[in-house]
Image 1 (tube, one colour):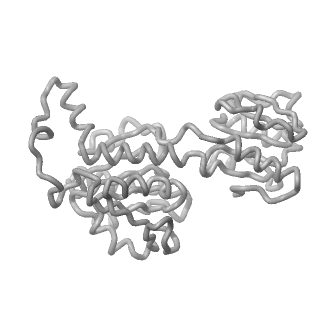
Image 2 (cartoon, rainbow, N blue to C red):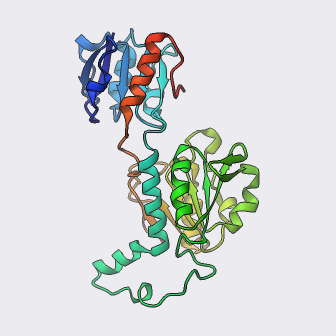
Image 3 (cartoon, rainbow, N blue to C red):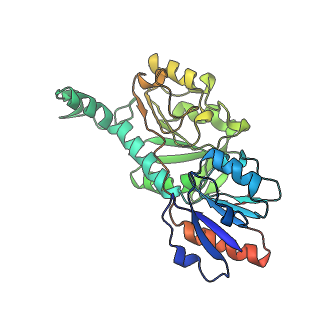
Length: 313
């Protein structure tokens, strides 16, 4: 059995040895060489779309694809037959995305972006320095005592929440089903009309599918307080970008820090670039899967044993 791993990510290949499988590196931006086309296992990360489509056509012995992406839309749209099992990299990006989200929240609260804007103009942002009111009502200036609502309460949210509570924030979650997860109260989406009006920061970590398309629309944006910030590190399609731009330009919300967009790169003509208090992050929250080797090894062991794999789509 051959396993192909991409050169787009550094892997500890030695940790994958000992399964009676031959390991071969491949360039994810090029077509699979003829001598490797009979591989049964393909690990993907940052693969070229055309190359994946070519692999779907030529790799007739393929049994399993281990994507290192949390949402492998590239693999799913490449045309692989249904007989090929696809597993995701869910869990490999929890820490990096949580860390980036925390950075965006702190930037929103402490206005590091505005300080930088003043700096490049050789101006002193005096209104942001010196004596300041402590936790003023109607402003998001600190995580302490802030109401943070995380919409899409999965692994990333569970990694992020303890850091927020450590800084004194009150964290609530929203998911398809209600319950308590890791000590955090998680509500069903039907509770959004009650939760949004008392939210200081809304963190969106929703997956990209038909059910989440434009989940944050004009109607729901109007429920947020005028000082609330929106942070999106899930999928760009979960936010109605025109409605968000309208809300920002009219001052109906405090601001937005966005790492994902409907179209990427974000087109130059997008209103979000110039919208009031809008931070554009170039899909930088993830992009570096961590600890992929144990997941690959675990699934490889189960594949050989004929058992169900982890993170199957």
